[in-house]
Image 1 (cartoon, rainbow, N blue to C red):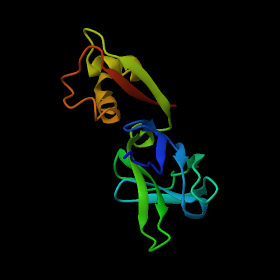
Image 2: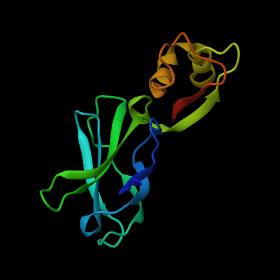
Image 3: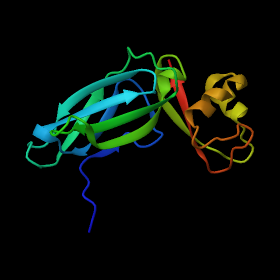
Length: 167
């Protein structure tokens, strides 16, 4: 028997580099057409809700701009959650959790990122020099790519790195 999917988060994808607001979109259904969102790092959080579908089992598309700028996040890694509150007991059901990386914690005045495909001869220091004018800022690139870079001394040809950019 196929699994019924109640809620899908299509954006952001796992480990996307996000800014403020966090744009959350997908498909869902909720009790009385209401779904909730939460963005948190385990220390602080921002929450809200939105309407989706018709409230009697229909799925609908959703898109939310979750403003999180006032949060006192302590970590680069955040979790984006979309869930329904149970009509029976108020518990969180049909929850989807997506881990993301929060760009404004990495670079001041974050506006987005550049994609860099690693070629022979690249080092994180060289990439930092090209993008920031300072090879010592290679740690910013490492922080933006924790799922790709496990050792800053080992990057591999063909890897695609996100280089966070501020103004």
